[in-house]
Structures are given as structure tokens and as C-alpha cells.
Image (cartoon, rainbow, N blue to C red; front, side, top):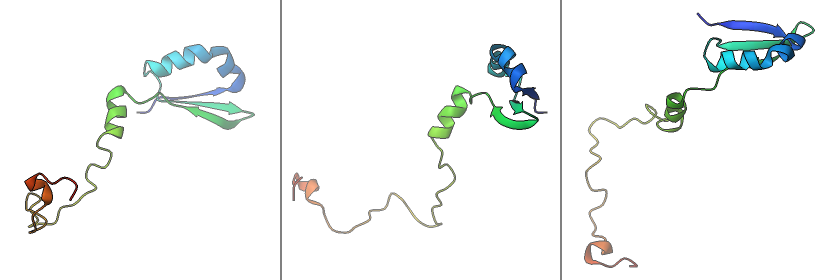
Length: 90
């Protein structure tokens, strides 16, 4: 169950460092800061290092479909390329 706490702006200001430490220790999942009874900010802890890396590397995982019967190792062209014979600027 998500651990959410709400603080008014005055209380948040007085306990800011303690609240940030609790977020960092994952004691809280979310902190809502209110002003005159209305939410003005929502704080969440940053993702773990592993989650951050996964978000960057592999973020397109599952988004590419290879049709059945397609062999990605088959040549795409029957013509020979100059690089086969050392010609790199053909």
C-alpha cells in the first residue's frame, strides 16, 4: 500500500529535511504539500539506479515485431559490394 503523507506549506517548511530523508529512505512513496487546503506540490523519491538504467536502456523493449518467417541473417541484396574487394570509396 502506498505511503502518502500530506503537509501544509508551513509544516513542510519546518520539517523539510526530515521529510526529504524519509523519502530517500523509501519510508514514504509520496508527499503532498498544500497551501490553503489545495495541493501545490507532490514529491516522490527518485527511481533506484537500476530502474533509471532500465528506463534508458531497453526503453523500446517489446515495441519491435519481426514477422514470422523473416530471417534477419539473410542477405538483403544479391549484388556484391565493393568493400568485399577492398574498395571502400566505390
